[in-house]
Amino acid sequence: MPELPELEITRRGILPHVLGQRVEQVIIRQPKLRWPVPQTVKNELPGQTIEGIARRAKYLLLHTNRGCLILHLGMSGSLRVLPAATPAGKHDHVDLVLANGIYLRLRDPRRFGAVLWTQEEVQKHPLLARLGPEPWDPAFSGAYLYGLARARRAAVKNFIMDARVVVGVGNIYANEALFRAGIHPNREAGRVSHKRYEELVRAIRAVLEEAIQQGGTTLRDFTRSDGTPGYFAQALAIYQRAGQACRRCGATIRKLRNLQRTSFYCSRCQR
DNA sequence: AGTGCGGCCTGTCCGC
DNA sequence: TGCGGACAGGCCGCAC
Image (tube, rainbow, N blue to C red):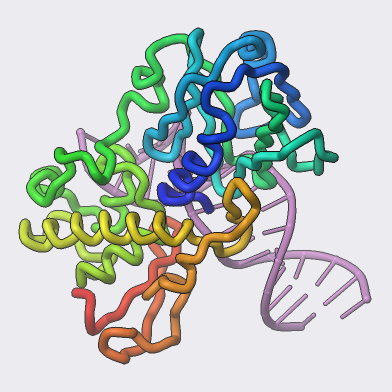
């Protein structure tokens, strides 16, 4: 389940192998993803040089001189840096063969990911155009959240997981940030104070930063681009700890569901 | 306009 | 041991 930290880990992991490399060949093994992998990728990309790798929300953007390859890893996607041609499994969708001999391989068993190609300004792409600020954008602040939340009746957890509000906060880190900020996941977004939104912004940034430092959260299938797991799973204070003791107060952690997603919370620490 | 839900997918785990 | 079903969940597209 790559969330923002896992995407950032992936971006940094592939960067030294991919930056400045010319694409020799694109191999589409299994085009079925959220949308079929467009043939234009195969036609347009070879011969072009990867000039930069950016991340916007959970999209990875491989910039070339003629366009931009947009990658999304969905729920179960991973990018691996392989030193040479390696036998492909049934969930290996696309290989980019680079001038340095590296195979950049996209694997995505659950097929929620995407590979897209655009020659327009990528930030104007329909998938990216309406996204909210990055968590570290100065525009993302307690005042911003508080202002946006006026008259919002939805649960605060759903509110901060809405990519139009802020990007990159998936289920794991939403749970962790709300725990740190002492806010109950089901509290109405419009009934959280300005001061507590300041706290929540700090908590979101802190938990994402720590997860990046730990190499991301490996629960089931996330591995870094070199195949090694991340270590943040050990630092999770609330996620998947239902029935266990809260590390802050000792109360039993509970769980509930909102929007078909599991929330974990401490009823003593979070109000 | 804000809100919530269905659907897309497959691997894993649990209970019978 | 085998099998069905729940679950994992990002996020688009749609209905209300």
